[in-house]
Image (cartoon, rainbow, N blue to C red; front, side, top):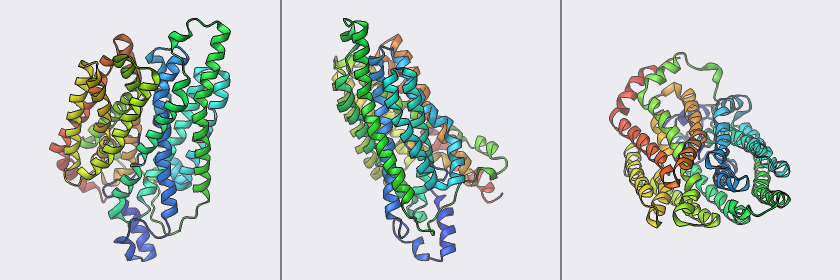
Amino acid sequence: MNGKSNLNPANSAGTEATGTQKSTGTKKNESGGFLYPGLLLPFVLIVSCFAAWGISTDLTAPMVNVFSSVFDMNAFQSALVQFAYFGAYFLLAIPAAIINTKLGFKGGVVLGMSMAALGAFMFFPASQIMTYGVFLAALFILAGGLSIVETSANPYVMSLGPEKNATRRLNFAQAFNPIGANIGVLMATLLVAPHIRESVDKSGLSEDQLLEQTSQELEKVMIPYIILGVLYVALALSIFFVKVPKNKAMEETDFSNVPKGVVGRLWNNGTYRFGVVAQFFNVAAQTCIWTFIPFYIQYTLDADLKTAGWWLQISLVFFLVARFVMVWLMGKIEGRYLLTIMCGLGVVFTIIGILSGNVLGALCIVALSACISLLFPTIYGISLTGVGRDTKFASSGLVMAIIGGAIAPMIQGAIQDATNPQVGFTFVLLCFIVIGAFGLYAIKHQKSDAIEAAPTMGKK
C-alpha cells in the first residue's frame, strides 16, 4: 500500500516551492530540474523508505496464511493480522500529521522508522512467548511507525523540488513501493513458507512435539522481521544524519490553524466525499487480493503453501509492471477515465475467478493486481481536486480510509469460512464496483465540485 500526503499532488506543492523561492530569490529553481540543488541524497534516502514499507506490507499479507497453519486458526481469526496492521494506520493518521508539525517531515520519517524497527524487533520475544496476541502487538507497533513514515515521506518528496515536477516526483517515489512489495513476498516465500507444515501434518504429533514444531516455525517467522528491523534502523540513522540545505521548499502542516467550516465544505464536495469511500474500498480490495490469493491457489489448484506464495509473487510483479504502464497511459488517457476502465476489467476478472476454479481463474485473480495498480494515487488526486485551502485536513480523511485494509480481510475471511476461497472473492467484486462508480461520478461531476469549492480557496 502507499502513503498519503497533506498536500494536493496536482498543485499544492506550489505553496511550498513558491515560498522558498521568494525567500532565496532563485528563479532558476522554479523552472529548473527535478530537485532543488543539494537534495539528491535526501531524496534517494526518502525514496528508499517507499520500498522499505512496501516490504513490510507485503511480507505481512502472506503471514495470514502462515499464522493460520501455525496456530491452526480459521481464515477469520488469522485475518486479525491485517486488522492489527491497517488498524494502526487508521489510529495514527492524525497523530502522525501532528508529529510533523512538531518535528518536521524529516523528523517524522526518523521517528516513524525508529518505531517500525521496534515493532520488527519485537518479533524475537514474540517467537519465544509463542502467543498470537504478542505477534499482533508487534505488528501494530511496526505498522504504527510506518503510518508516521508514509504521512511524512509523501509531502517531503513533493517539497524537494519545483512545483511543476511535484506529481512526477511523487509518482517516481511511489513506483519503488511495489519493488519493496515483491521483495516482501519473496522473503515470505523463501524464508518462511518452506518451513511451515500444514495442519494435517501435525495431527499425529504429541503435545511436546507440537510445541517444539510451533517454536521452530515461529522462529522462521521472526527472521525476515529482524532483517527489516536492521534495515529500518539503518534508514533512520542515515536520514537523521544527512544534511539538508536550509533553502529546501517545505511548508509544514499546522493542525492548530484548520480553516473554519472545513468539515462542512468537504462534506458538500461530492467528489471528495465519494473519494474517501472509494479509497476505503480500494485499500480493502488490495489487501484482500494479496491476502487471499494463497488461499485461492491452494483451493483451486491443490497447491502447497510455497507454490501459492509464488503465485502471489507473480501477482506483485504484475502490479509493479502495471504501475509504470499506467504512468505512461496517463499521458494519453485522463486519470478518472483510466480508473473506470481498469475497474471494469477488475469486475470481469473477478467474476471469471469466482466462476472458474482452474488455471484460468487463477490467472484472472492474479491479474487483479494490474487493475489496482493505479487506483490509490488516482483516487487520491481526484479526491483532492478543488479542495483548495482545505487540502491538509482533507488528506487526513484519505489516510484514515486505510482502515478498509483492517476490516475487509475479516469480511472476506468470514465469507470464505462459510463457503470457499472462490466465493470469498465476491467481496473484491463489490470493491471494484464501488470504485468504478466513483470513477463514473468523477467523470460526470468533478468540474462542478471544483467550481463550487473555488470561491472559498483564497479566504481564511
